[in-house]
Amino acid sequence: MIRFDDVTKEYPGGTVAVNGLSLTIPTGQITALVGPSGCGKTTSLRMINRMIEPTRGLISIDGKGVADLDAATLRRGIGYVIQHAGLFPHRTVLDNVATVPRLLGWDRAKARAAAQDWMERVGLSPDLADRYPSQLSGGQQQRVGVARALAADPPILLMDEPFSAVDPVVRQQLQSELLRLQAELHKTIVFVTHDIDEALLLGNQVAVLRVGGILAQVARPADLLAAPADDFVADFLGRDRGIRALSFVGMPRLPLHPELTLALGEVPPADAPDWMLVVEGGHPLGWVRTAGVQGAVDTSDLNRSGTVASLTASPREVLDAALSSPARRGVLVDEAGEFVGTVRASELATLLEAGQA
Image 1 (cartoon, one colour):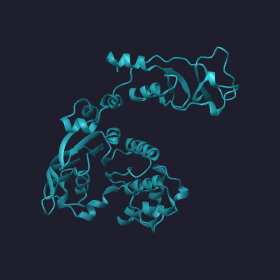
Image 2: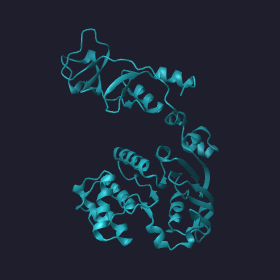
Image 3: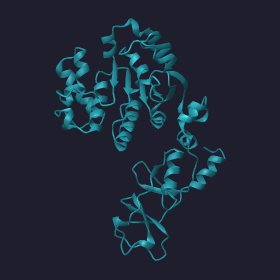
Image 4: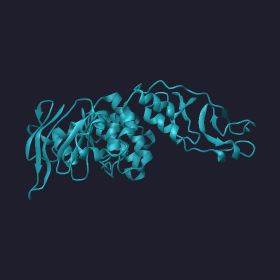
């Protein structure tokens, strides 16, 4: 457990970056620090590993004040991931990942074996081991950064806007990868972000900071959305709080409707409905408007605007699938990604209003 007890960071000249912060970061969970620029979230994170020293107050890890620990020893026991990965350009991927184990005195063979293992665990191909950072994509560099931070298996991981410099698709992949790893590793993670959606997705608890380094509210994502502490928190969360909250409620028992489907190369029947779902090997490809199909269905006929939700999806994901579908029928798939039926937004809304979530 990490604790901030009335911690303040004031710079010469009187600028206060963090003001009287008291916060408990539970062991084995992700705590997201979020807020606008200048709210002190990165300063707070960097005071944990003493890259920045507090002006006053106490920061402790499992009851031990970090100020009483040797700074270099402290940092070697804490993983650290930053926005642009911060890789050594003159070292290969494998040697970058092996950096901390080598600093801890591991022999070269043991450190490289651990590095190879962590590369695989974060989704990096072994073929990348001998490449240099300049030869990697942005997403691959961030994966290397995560692997390097975890290579010595530290109990604490500090992550300072690690996914903000990659494109949205890669960012979503990295977020999913982090959640998968955390379900396996149960690290104590402090995650800094300016993106409230990212904080709500990743954080077991979310700490919202206001400009001047003042803690506005700390709560579980569902509680934060349901009961913002004040106007600042409410405005920072945004207008679609009700939609976001659907990510954190249980899925009601929705009726699954059968659907007439087509395969590529098939001709829609004469009595076909306005929209039909096209599947291949059981996997949905998209919808076709049957009136616009000339002969057999081709990939050029597909409308791919609709998202797909799994049977274990949240109400938010299922509602999105229904509303984004040109047929207004949300496509649901099983664990194998095969089509199992469709749902209606109106039926989901009725059940949610009745409190059956």
